[in-house]
Structures are given as C-alpha cells and as structure tokens.
Length: 121
Image (cartoon, rainbow, N blue to C red; front, side):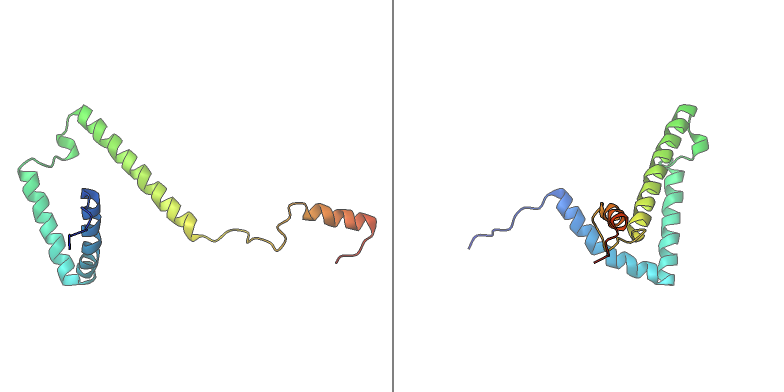
C-alpha cells in the first residue's frame, strides 16, 4: 500500500513542534530548580551575545537607530496592550444581562396598554 500521508508545510511542522514544547516548558517553569537553571543559562547566553556585539544596548546605537528601535518598542507595546484589553473584554460577562423581553418595542406596548387601561397578560 502506498504511503498516503500529506506533506506538512513548514508552518504546520513549526506549530506541531510548539505544541509539543508547551508541556515541557510548563514543567520547567513549575520546578523552581530547573527554572533557576534556565534563567541562568539565558543570562549567560545574553552576555555571550553582548560580548560578540550581536546585541547592542540602546546607548550604543546611533540617534537614528535609537528612534527606530523605540518606534518598534512602542508598536510592540501597543499590540501587547491591545491583546490584554481583548482578553479582559472576553472575560467580563455582558453588562447588563439580557432581559426576558427581546422585543425592542416592548416598552412602547406597555405604555400603550397603560394609556388604554388594559391589564397586563
């Protein structure tokens, strides 16, 4: 029988890899010893990059590069804040909750009935 598996695109492979990494990352973050080791490792990696001048601090950039970098930071911060706002909006229930009467003319019908002296059903 022929192998009928569909070739995965690069994005599909990356997504599958990310989903597999999530539980591992969560286990590391929940373990204080492993989390401290990970942070130390990241710190060392950052210092090595800084020594090789692969990472520059903002003070080492030219004025033009500083403006460009700060513009990128502002845009990223704005996107982050929008995401946080969207999460908070989704988590809040509707205010006020929907009423039993969905008819927009319901209030007008009540007023007409009161004016004519009719009783409520």
